[in-house]
Length: 339
Image (tube, rainbow, N blue to C red; front, side, top):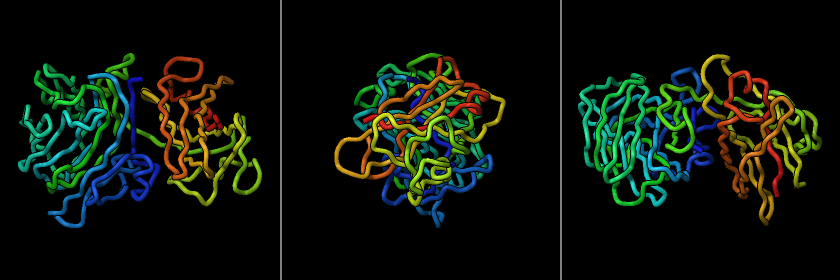
């Protein structure tokens, strides 16, 4: 799979960030404010002009040496600090974008500057930034702004460690004062097939929620029945006051979802069931997609007693082929007890 992770910061509150992301710096402050399209954004903006607002990190699993990350970004204050950092599965940092006090952005290998942009970026202005790197002693990088190449070159991009993709962090990693905002983020590696193995350009990550019951309603709701289950799982941010549950292997719930815009390319669907187990022992679920009577299950996700998002990306629709907006709008999505 080439597409590894997306986030539009639309479907959870800042207090719930570690139900989707892996970790954060202890001084991290921020909010999920209104983003560039009127929905969510991650605002790492503190109370004072000199306050370090920290970073947030996502661990992932990848095997390819080529990575691409893209996201909408703006800074309210510029300082000498990190915008995004890519690291391997052992935690070794490789390529980074960093700001400097004058308003430029540099491409770095764990702090070692490889190139500096001539562009002076404005504060409080949205840009769409993308960084592609071949992580190798004889590697390469390309930095794009709003779809246009800004910096590129060949360089040693491997800071020891290995070349696989282990994830990313966004925000200030070393105490600088550049307060930043992020929206519509994607991360992919060079595996798989086009278009999800190279720059995607300025994209929008849209969160949609259940809007009605689907073909299957086998889980039991917190209201004691299996009727109108979609009403128990339709919150924009995670909630545990109402829920659906099942202990029967094979039981599944599917739901109709809200529509997305009918134009544009769909690069993938990221399932994000918010789930937990309620007793000891191993339990797991799979996500389910249903389109035109054809259903496919996703990868197995083990449950913890602590609730969290169990992310599962699908780049192809049930029955095969790329997703379209029409497919999304007519499909059902849900969950099934795996074990």
